Length: 255
Image (tube, rainbow, N blue to C red):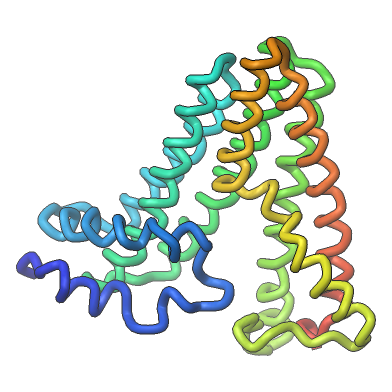
């Protein structure tokens, strides 16, 4: 297939309504990264690189962000932030390339989810190690515990489709909203969702917060800000793990 113009590519790779998807697009992607990713995708159309290969590179960037964040110093936090931006860029571009080339596949969807699991866990674990000042201690444990919680939250969501498939039902769609058997639970979910506290454990927001706390740590001459962030991540991950499970069981998604 000959290389398209950016305008032609955008029509296929970023179809109308794609950026307005309720649950499919991260705010950073809609705000700025999709404006950049289309040019990376355009460059990729001139190469033999496949969408799945981009997804592998995306995953490596996400894991590398966690490794770099574990290192001491402000520049490590800057490096981790930039690597997460690369992760987000490729997360946008691999799907765009797949839509243009027609190489969408279940393997691609699977690899994309695996990459999200790995990146989220790596950044949280790296933050905990960073808070320990290179020698493992309870902050390391808290970072890894938060990483486990983040994985469990994603697993709880993915297992809804597994349960429905095993029951012979179609996959759950969140695009139309989640209906609850109890109006009180629905109200509680909306209140918690409005606080956006769940985003603290997500790589993009967490890398930004880690950079801010690194700046504060440099000014204060200690790791207090980073350690507070680790504790906050653990609390958020623990609460989400329980509340997300309750919300799924109380909703009609398993009906």
